Amino acid sequence: MRELAARAQRLNNAGGSNTVEVARYRFWLHVLTAARAGTLTPNWRDTLTADVLYEMIGTPGGRPPAAAASIGQCDAEDLALYEVVTSPAADWEPYAARGDWRSALDAWYHESIRRLDAYEPAQNRALGRTP
Image (cartoon, rainbow, N blue to C red; front, side, top):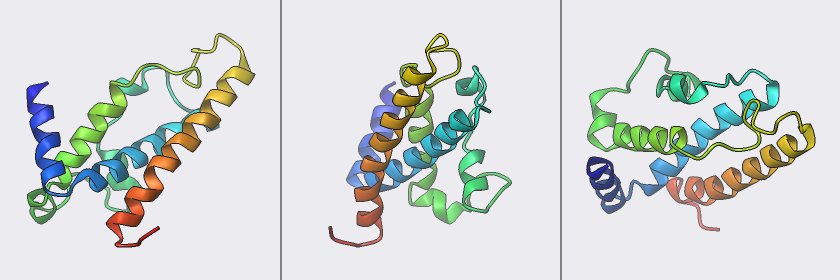
């Protein structure tokens, strides 16, 4: 746990909080899209890996080059992955709502909006845009 806290501090000191937020959003986008499509498995937390991010951005096959790792990209992805897989279970996850589809759908919608609201400012900062 201390190691993750130290990584997070290094990333924040280096301006990497935007990178973490963007990586976190991409993980959640993958998970929430699978949940909405009905393809999210009950054990998704055990199978989610950083490879999902690389497939989403068109670089399948593993970690980015050493140059990306040297600027903290891998730390950001590892931290975001850890935060996603250790988050509390939600009603939109498989079988969590116990058959109450409306509760599951509402929870999914609110989580999607919450994740997008956190992502947009980070993406704008990363791209140098001002609100």
